[in-house]
Amino acid sequence: MAASSQDVPAFLRLAAHPLRWRLLTELARSDLRVRELVALIGQPQNLVSYHLRLLRDGGLVTATRSSFDGRDSYYHLDLDRCAEALAGTGPALHPALRADGASPAPPLHQRRSPRRAVLFVCTGNSARSPIAEALLRHHTAGTVVVTSAGSRPRPELHPHGVRVLRDRYGIDLAGQRPRHLDSLTGRRFDYVITLCDKAREVCPEFGGQARRMHWSIPDPASAGDRDQAGYSAFARTTAEIDTRIRHLLPVIATHRITSQGG
Image 1 (cartoon, rainbow, N blue to C red):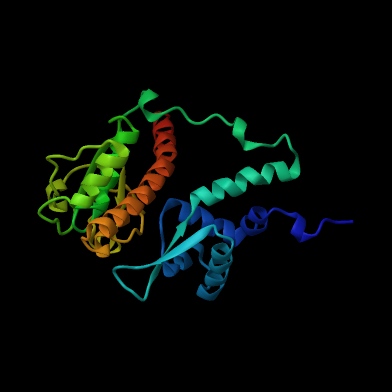
Image 2: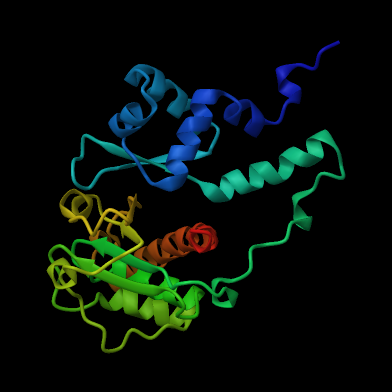
């Protein structure tokens, strides 16, 4: 007797559908809006929205309201949840198919290939983008050229962001100041990653070779400047950025390996 659909792991039921798999692969590259997914996949909006709802109900995809246009939402793939779901899928078929024996990719600082350049962009360059810059530099031991800038930079870094990085990650941003995007004209970047919905709309091109990505992350400064509430908001945002940075590392590593062959 054929097994019922209830016997199939939930991740397989969700990901095995061709359209949902395509949605997952597009969202693995960048946070996107529904209309952008419709254009990429070439399917009607009602069909794309239906499958996005299934992925959200399954916990693989989340949505955040756009800070640029409150009528819009950005969809984000929860890669940690995907990893957990995948880890549980193999043993459902056979106990020997466990994911804990896989060897991770060698750290970037152990690779001998051209250094990649990454630019993080937000509006004020006082919170999200300098946090991302500091974390990527920290995780790669300085072997990736990392820069951040803003479309409307503030006079100084937000003190809560500086404190969180110092207290929880041992990173010191003393002496760093926000910079304007205009100061980077003519620079070459392999990755340009916007962390602010508003900045995404105005971020200039940095050559055809740059891979554009978007992380729709709300501004932690919107929680206010009260010490405990503000600090907690920055701690949560920094943890989310750190998770995204950890998922970015193998993408950069793969890019570096591929580039060596041509």
